Image (cartoon, rainbow, N blue to C red; front, side, top):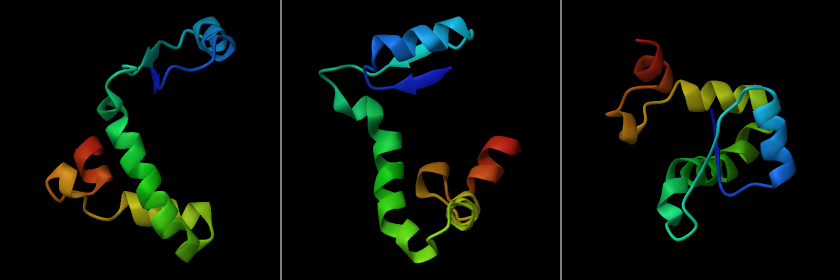
Length: 79
Protein backbone atom coordinates (compact mmCIF):
# COMPACT_ATOMS: atom_id res chain seq x y z
CA UNK A 1 0.00 0.00 0.00
CA UNK A 2 1.05 3.57 -0.70
CA UNK A 3 -0.71 6.38 1.15
CA UNK A 4 -0.59 9.93 -0.21
CA UNK A 5 -2.56 13.00 -1.00
CA UNK A 6 -4.44 12.91 -4.28
CA UNK A 7 -1.48 12.15 -6.50
CA UNK A 8 -1.00 12.31 -10.23
CA UNK A 9 -2.83 9.74 -12.33
CA UNK A 10 0.38 8.67 -14.06
CA UNK A 11 1.94 7.74 -10.72
CA UNK A 12 -1.25 5.92 -9.71
CA UNK A 13 -1.01 3.93 -12.95
CA UNK A 14 2.58 3.01 -12.08
CA UNK A 15 1.54 1.78 -8.63
CA UNK A 16 -1.31 -0.29 -10.06
CA UNK A 17 1.00 -1.82 -12.67
CA UNK A 18 3.23 -3.00 -9.83
CA UNK A 19 0.39 -4.33 -7.69
CA UNK A 20 0.58 -1.51 -5.14
CA UNK A 21 -2.69 -0.20 -3.76
CA UNK A 22 -2.81 3.62 -3.79
CA UNK A 23 -4.77 5.04 -0.88
CA UNK A 24 -5.44 8.78 -1.02
CA UNK A 25 -6.44 11.15 1.73
CA UNK A 26 -9.65 13.11 1.77
CA UNK A 27 -9.53 16.44 -0.05
CA UNK A 28 -11.71 18.20 2.50
CA UNK A 29 -10.04 16.65 5.55
CA UNK A 30 -6.31 17.49 5.68
CA UNK A 31 -5.94 15.72 9.04
CA UNK A 32 -5.82 12.42 7.13
CA UNK A 33 -2.26 13.41 6.21
CA UNK A 34 -1.38 14.21 9.83
CA UNK A 35 1.30 11.59 10.37
CA UNK A 36 3.32 12.44 7.28
CA UNK A 37 2.88 16.17 7.87
CA UNK A 38 4.21 15.68 11.42
CA UNK A 39 7.14 13.68 10.07
CA UNK A 40 8.01 16.47 7.62
CA UNK A 41 7.89 18.98 10.48
CA UNK A 42 10.30 16.82 12.49
CA UNK A 43 12.50 16.29 9.43
CA UNK A 44 12.77 20.02 8.73
CA UNK A 45 13.64 20.69 12.37
CA UNK A 46 16.22 17.95 12.95
CA UNK A 47 17.76 17.08 9.57
CA UNK A 48 19.99 20.20 9.47
CA UNK A 49 21.62 19.03 12.72
CA UNK A 50 22.67 15.76 11.11
CA UNK A 51 23.07 16.77 7.46
CA UNK A 52 23.09 13.06 6.65
CA UNK A 53 20.00 10.98 5.90
CA UNK A 54 21.33 7.80 7.53
CA UNK A 55 22.18 9.61 10.78
CA UNK A 56 18.77 11.29 10.81
CA UNK A 57 17.03 7.96 10.18
CA UNK A 58 18.92 6.36 13.07
CA UNK A 59 17.97 9.26 15.35
CA UNK A 60 14.31 9.26 14.32
CA UNK A 61 13.80 5.49 14.51
CA UNK A 62 15.52 5.13 17.88
CA UNK A 63 13.93 7.98 19.80
CA UNK A 64 10.70 7.48 21.78
CA UNK A 65 7.61 8.99 20.16
CA UNK A 66 4.71 10.37 22.17
CA UNK A 67 2.22 9.05 19.58
CA UNK A 68 3.61 5.53 20.17
CA UNK A 69 3.22 5.71 23.96
CA UNK A 70 6.88 6.69 24.26
CA UNK A 71 8.11 3.62 22.41
CA UNK A 72 10.58 3.86 19.56
CA UNK A 73 9.23 3.04 16.09
CA UNK A 74 11.29 -0.15 16.17
CA UNK A 75 9.69 -1.19 19.47
CA UNK A 76 6.19 -0.34 18.24
CA UNK A 77 6.38 -2.05 14.86
CA UNK A 78 8.81 -4.91 15.34
CA UNK A 79 7.61 -6.24 18.69
